[in-house]
Length: 197
Image 1 (tube, rainbow, N blue to C red):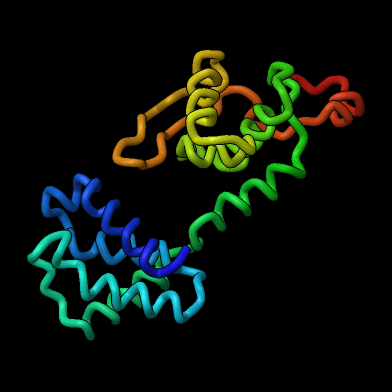
Image 2: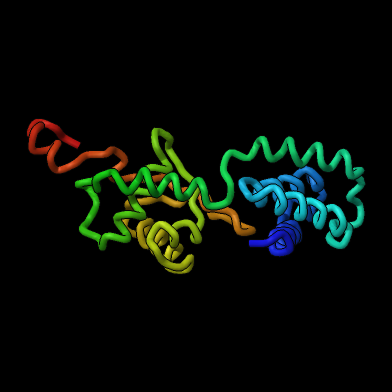
């Protein structure tokens, strides 16, 4: 993705974000969106995208009043706060999930659905909930976002997941994995016959 596409995506997200539209931390959130999109990209792309953003931000809303110097300082601060470049977190989660066994509690779904469940378990970890978008669910399954969203809904209907909060404005939904939260392989069950879930 080149700098022009990055900035176009950022401006589209700014227009859709209800907190920016309502005037809540508009400048900070806009700069954070940009920081997230350019994190991990070549320096020349980062610099070009930052220049395009600053030169054209007034086309999105006309009360952006930061000086170029202040904008660059804040952008650098926001980039330091971004833990993952786009796609990095999902790649890391999928790598971890791919080495884990399926839960014995899960039905015999197809392998792509079981991979999605392992991703859900990895995201939840020791917490009571996790966040996942339809797009990333689709990536976990090696499919498109609509398929990922449909299967997240199906897993909720099957009682394996619980939807805690539906995402809006292209944000991830909040779920809780109810069944198979612990890694438990068949081999472990055989070696530990007294083990009960």
